[in-house]
Length: 550
Ligand SMILES: *[C@@H]1O[C@H](CO)[C@@H](O)[C@H](O)[C@H]1NC(C)=O
Ligand SMILES: *[C@@H]1O[C@H](CO)[C@@H](O)[C@H](O)[C@H]1NC(C)=O
Ligand SMILES: *[C@@H]1O[C@H](CO)[C@@H](O)[C@H](O)[C@H]1NC(C)=O
Ligand SMILES: *[C@@H]1O[C@H](CO)[C@@H](O)[C@H](O)[C@H]1NC(C)=O
Ligand SMILES: *[C@@H]1O[C@H](CO)[C@@H](O)[C@H](O)[C@H]1NC(C)=O
Ligand SMILES: *[C@@H]1O[C@H](CO)[C@@H](O)[C@H](O)[C@H]1NC(C)=O
Ligand SMILES: *[C@@H]1O[C@H](CO)[C@@H](O)[C@H](O)[C@H]1NC(C)=O
Ligand SMILES: *[C@@H]1O[C@H](CO)[C@@H](O)[C@H](O)[C@H]1NC(C)=O
Ligand SMILES: *[C@@H]1O[C@H](CO)[C@@H](O)[C@H](O)[C@H]1NC(C)=O
Ligand SMILES: *[C@@H]1O[C@H](CO)[C@@H](O)[C@H](O)[C@H]1NC(C)=O
View 1: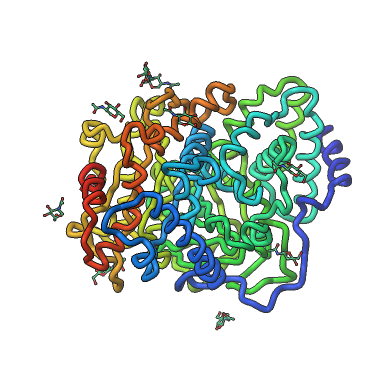
View 2 (view 1 turned 180 degrees about the vertical axis):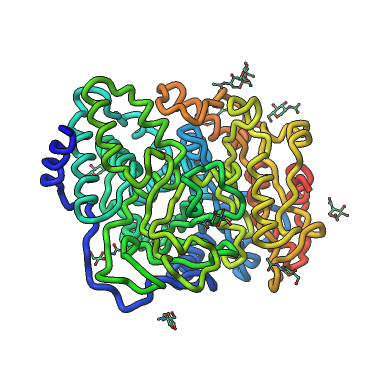
């Protein structure tokens, strides 16, 4: 086969940028049972929270809520806030960007701006993981800037970007030649890397663990980032239709990769992820530089890979070349484009009850494949993280089978997962589809889980679930219900989708509700009001009456 000899030439040209490297193992354990937070996550959050708490004070002071003293209230204890950016392709990335911009004091200087600075955590899934990932890797750029940059991204398919294809091949071949299994997600990830780099994104360190070294992480100015993915069970033929609520929801943070799920509860060090392990022990030297962001974001957003590759409209030699290469590089995956192969750090571990331990690889696929849970809420339902307010984007197109608008389906699906993980009664009540639509909840934000009388506390704690603030994608100022498979957006479509979200989260710059910013401030305090059984200020009560579903 001609293609093989061509590939061999490429392999010999391979550069080390993407190739994992072998290094001596650190003295610390590479895995840990999920008992409490990772010590370094806990340390990060402690520092971040002193910053975010100050930002929350600043935000609340601008609201001038009567008979409420911000300093004395927050000095006692300030609530933890998390943001969950959902998946749904480029539509979801742009929608998430608009929501983040509307909450970002650097972009929206009045009104709702400043709440992003008060957030401790941020998570992304699929299209949301690209957004969160790129913002973090670029040292916490503001989302409006990223949207501007995205309009400069050029994908191959034209002669002038053919050089990119060669670089991608070199990188993937280099990794394969060094003895690591590759999958199409490697190529997709590299493509994404080069496209974003050429559009101007500065990658100081393109690894996920490398985020630890960025200055906005070192000085705690970014919320702690998490991206999520779903792990397939071995022996399910890469068939994503076999995925159910029992499939582990995997978290990928700058410190660790693993799952809190009841049948898993283990994490492994992100920095040494490529290391071959058996029962928690490295078999040989350790491996670094495996945790490339493209591999991670491509694994979280697996729904896209096939669409994207098909969407390039690659003609002639481009097509022949890439198809041949994909077959060659993807022997294990057998053409299943939607699954990322990751060296399994939990191989043969006796402490894990899931059969995930029988395979040398983890098969990671789109987080949204787990029963349409395309909002990464689960990381923030973990009681260990002590989240009080969870702001969620929902750019789903549930109605009209993928062409319509959200109907709350994803929020309801996560109830099933929560029941399985934490027991029934923990998760906030979400209206059914009919009530959701009747109450116009796809057109305006809503608060879920306000009423703790109808909720249970997590086992062995006094905590309730966080209150969920739902920011749905409605047809407010733009019909942004594009299909998840749509990859190319015109300037008008990009701006329309982004601004639709911006308007949704700011309630059209407070023109739909002049005290919406007060309501966001109030809801951030709700769990703390409840814990202290303190009087709820009138302005806050009025917000809860308007926005609380229950
Ligand atoms: C490493 O793991 C072992 C159990 O596998 C445990 O006994 C030991 O305390 C751990 N060491 C550290 C530093 O956590
Ligand atoms: C990337 O870095 C270069 C050189 O430091 C700078 O000119 C450019 O503005 C940066 N781009 C972004 C998007 O931050
Ligand atoms: C952070 O940077 C230091 C100094 O360059 C390096 O030794 C270390 O390996 C880096 N850490 C990570 C997780 O990349
Ligand atoms: C692993 O467990 C899952 C869930 O119970 C099951 O569907 C799958 O068939 C199992 N795989 C193997 C190889 O036993
Ligand atoms: C958007 O939703 C409307 C219904 O509100 C539907 O008629 C239209 O086809 C959808 N657009 C796309 C691009 O799917
Ligand atoms: C919580 O406690 C109840 C009662 O003790 C028990 O039945 C349930 O299994 C526990 N749930 C979890 C998730 O541990
Ligand atoms: C639904 O919400 C939108 C946005 O707030 C508003 O313009 C519209 O009038 C509402 N429709 C109904 C039926 O309440
Ligand atoms: C809160 O929930 C309880 C128990 O379900 C119910 O009796 C009460 O009316 C609810 N309160 C509000 C304000 O909805
Ligand atoms: C979106 O709203 C506009 C203005 O209300 C309306 O003209 C348009 O038909 C709507 N589009 C869809 C797809 O629902
Ligand atoms: C809200 O403000 C933004 C930024 O100034 C602007 O682009 C947007 O059009 C405004 N929204 C409305 C509904 O006027």
